[in-house]
Image 1 (tube, rainbow, N blue to C red):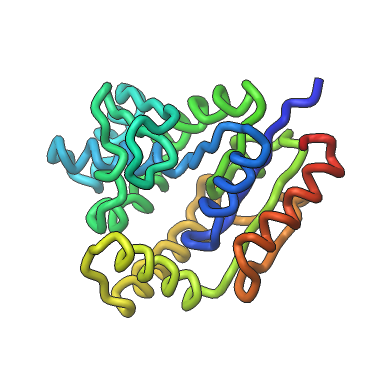
Image 2 (image 1 turned 135 degrees about the vertical axis):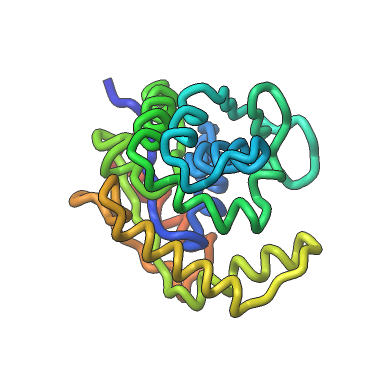
Length: 228
């Protein structure tokens, strides 16, 4: 039986979330940005004053923290409700402090093992667009459609910078670019589940085409695979 799952991977701000939301809306699928789980653990560590460099403590948090993703209940621009131990933390996981620490937390093997299992269970239900960095290679290697989106660090930093301005948050482009480059370095060189395209992934360069165009390209692939 075909498990209707689209694995959508790529570096930070490559357009995964925007395109993933369009696909989920068009297909009536669950939109699941798996990065929120790593952000949730990072936020839990910051709030509990657990040192980010304490791998054992962060792993314990990943194993014990209840993270739930539900349809949005508030019309404030969110695509889901993100609940951490029952509390709504949808926007708190998007702060610059979490941005600056999430990649380190995501390198810990114990954290990744705990969260990968939770992600896989959701993916195996089917009818889900899963967005992340290791969906096609680790979380859902049997997904019938795997996409890898990419763009230059400069373009991705510009997008992230604009997102913050649009939310009314202070932002500095050079600082955002530095964080994007640092995150790329960590994500692509970590020992566990490094950022890379799956061997059978369709690679799409989103540098100079719109999210709508990327969406239509992937939708055509989904139709060819019998997912749509």
